[in-house]
Image (cartoon, rainbow, N blue to C red; front, side, top):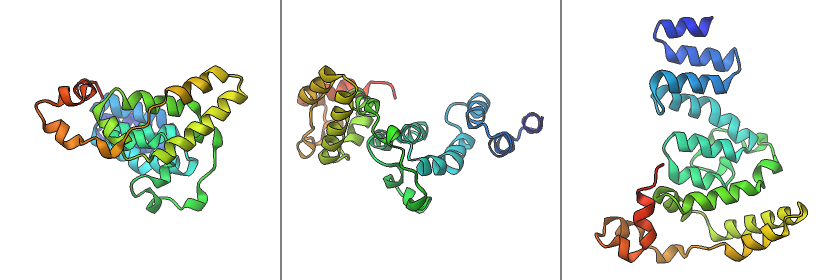
Length: 200
């Protein structure tokens, strides 16, 4: 009732605070924000950074971290979050003490994270640029872990396919800024133009 009352008085922020702190329903709070002020409003942004992000860092949940940065329109960070611990992104180490972070291996070593990462970097230019900030060593380590998981699951063919078809990007050989400004970018790197037109 209190949440509804705050909406009637045009106080979305107070309504969201009630839903988060009293009702403990983050999903409903996000839904109310998106319905009331649109998909990327200021209250939603504050909710994600002040309420959801600290808990996500503590839980070491890469899925939620990627979602948060995606909603904040930080695609370069969102794709990096799929392969990097949330506490190592931006200045998150100043938000939460590393000692309180939980090691949830089923969220860290989820094969779907790697497949989503590969899909996104091949579909959208901002994600592609963000993927250039991920070290090849990190990619390689995660590929080996995922391969081991797939083999233990009995998915040997998927493991072989992953190792055989994975393409490491030569980061130093791609002049992204020049390609974005060049009128001949489609001839220089055929995928750049297509990725630039992909939806976020």
